[in-house]
Length: 135
Image (cartoon, rainbow, N blue to C red; front, top):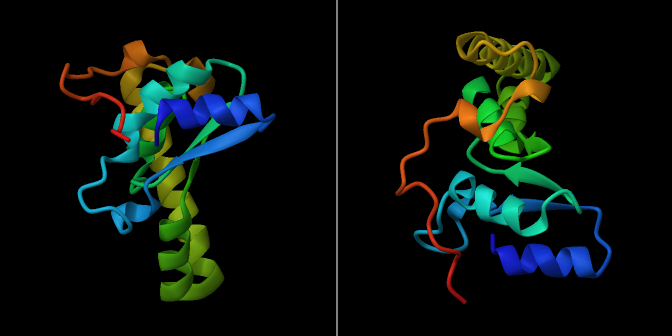
């Protein structure tokens, strides 16, 4: 969650990290991972892949994270909910719903692919990115 931790991961040779607040369940009032993502991505640049863990509920959330610099997102909760509700068919449905949401969001942005996304595709309020999490 902290840019300095991301820089340390680069220093020790990690090839990827995840920005995660563990579902917000470990730290009361932990900031949303999407709010921390830009600062972490800025801290490491292209030196390491940054994944987003948490807060992915729809395809538009995937698009936002990718536009903010994540290389991938984790969908553990959605996957598990689909599995619990309907087994393999539930997981297949979750993936189809997320994919449709990604496609619809890309269409709305006038983008052909997730690879075409940039931060400029989003309107980000000045209050969106907090200062790094205090230590």
